[in-house]
Image (cartoon, rainbow, N blue to C red; front, top):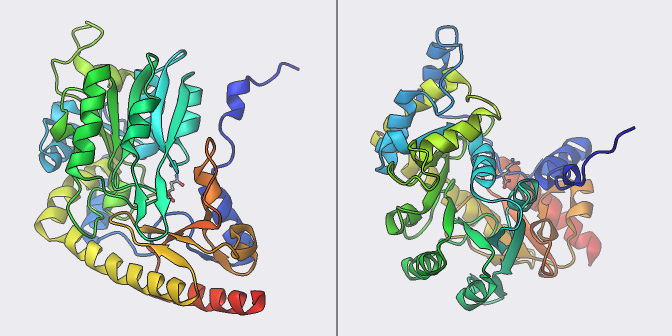
Length: 384
Ligand code: GLN
């Protein structure tokens, strides 16, 4: 029998899929994988119902022109520079395949979202992580000096995420300016994963492309924005047309669309139609403001409950996750006791994870959060 290539082992079952599988097996409340309990908004669902049965065939690999324009209008970029993908996961993979390969290093932070490292490896590149620092009083922070020190002559790209999964950090203008200066100094691409761009609780996150349009690829997600994570409609906003590092005359977006075409070819056409219709409605109707207010309330409910049980909670500035330290709760045991969360170690592979770190999602119903807290209280009593 021929053997699988070693790279086929670069990607094991995702921690999110595993915790959801275990949650189902043990009947646990799932505060692990980040998908919302609430239904997507009616204006999205109605648009999809109208499109299914009428627009059911392939669309262009770069995306439906109406959707590219709607995303462009929403982000303030030209729709011609936008490529629609099957979710942010495919967007990130297409960028990995397009931007780096053997001999290249890709800089990212740790704790790290689980697809960044395997995707870099599958592209043949070497992921290099720089640890965020965690202080019990001040929470998470970026170590800019460590980031600068990690750049080598092989570094090809910087992978950022703000609001940041799992820490909930929203990077400040000063931090982003320093990162952009570093990228310019060493001529690096910037991949900015901004799927939680509308999920913030303080200052509005800064879009990195506004600071460095010539080298930034922005990754976004209709699933995260519109509470439909299974729809698989994401996007890449590429550096503006005209930037064509290969001299092929096609521009960056056209080249990236060419790579994308070899994966899923196109995103589901009727769902693209629906997202194109929904993006301007979400803006006009204040959908994101409502989402933020609701999630802030659920975050407070969860954070208050966890603190009351003795956990140290680090409040996020964005995303729908919080991180907490409680060394006596192990995620593997908690799921058997009826609460699924993500173990901190899942976000670390090159540096040690802080002892007792957990990521807990609050995009779940108030009822689910309440039940999870009750079960944790019982577990805590059993443990003492
Ligand atoms: N972004 C989601 C999370 O962090 C999971 C994504 C996935 O499972 N593909 O929970």
